[in-house]
Image (cartoon, rainbow, N blue to C red):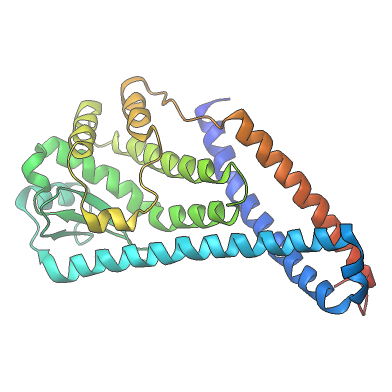
Length: 285
């Protein structure tokens, strides 16, 4: 499968996952109605187990997604405090690179000891850089970093990544869920690197990536990305810059089998809930 085909398939899977989550929540609502209306349910082991599994898995998924949303909100608040309390004029080198990339008015500098550049904001994303970033990067590397962040800004990647993490968190009871969230984060970074190559050389982008990876992370930026970089992210990004073909982490066979088995059990439980709905007052809901 070509790189374009893989990216198209990856993009198509997320709407399908969203539809699956919506269907699961609807089944959970149906199961609660069956608990409340079918008095004989408690005396039929299989039916009771199926209804309980649907409700319990939906509750677990919603709770996990709520935790991700709460952490994301806390991280966004930390970035807002950093921007509000330490806003600075753009360093000349940053301002020049931003203007050359058409980012005037979309980049803001903050006083922070750790050099970083991050795209933040769900509705109106913007690029935040520390005032020390220009001190550790050459002008060409600085342009490469801002080109990378410009891709995040244009594609509204903060919102896309949060949506992917929420969906993956909903499936916390499935072994593949954590891998799926990490794969989504890695794909977003790889796409931004590819977009940046139209404005910067491979060597400059790789140099900036390695320099920033070797330096301490800003606590506020780390709080805004509680999942951190997926395993092998740095190696995959450097491999893409060097060879054009990143080595993406593969899902372990045992996790794939466990996830398939879990989905099969959930599907059987969901079909049981749909069948029981015919016994509800008024028939099928």
